[in-house]
Length: 220
Image (cartoon, rainbow, N blue to C red; front, side):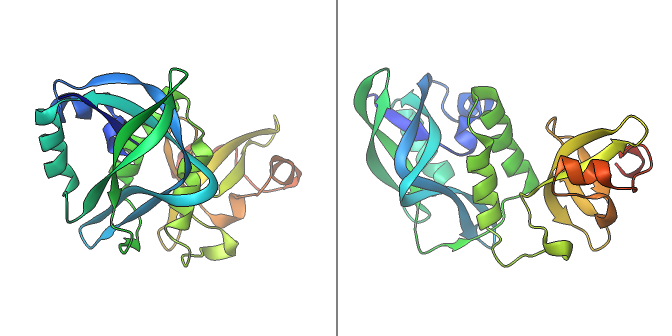
């Protein structure tokens, strides 16, 4: 028997779904309204989940899966001890339909996902045109007590002066701090390590600065 399945985490990756659920068929994309995206988990890792929050919404993919596909997902999702199942109503193709979602036990604590796992979601968001702010907010909220030097937090947007003479800047996302350098990614997901003195909260502040040595590649 076929059913609709809501994917909001790594199962938005079509290659992964082809491996886990060979008979699955992508029906389309939509949003789950009244829910927010979070990262929670255990000592073995943190993964995506959704929890009710009025006024919020989470972009998702809708798959059609069969019984064998669902059995496979049950194993990967750790059902029923890690994730449980819940039927939700979503809009798909102009119609209200019911689809099943795996939701993590709400008693699990917030946690930081691995870079590899987060990257899968990030690429899916880019591919399907989902608002990156949803993903970045979830990442930022998974580390509420992790203030970095200068008041920066993971997920914050910063600007660097990339070419002083030409007045060029670029936008980056803060990913972490290794004790000496900040770890940043650009929109193409290239990775950089830079000192705090080169980071600014606005393009205007970066242009007004006298810092910068002509590029970030020397610290990549």
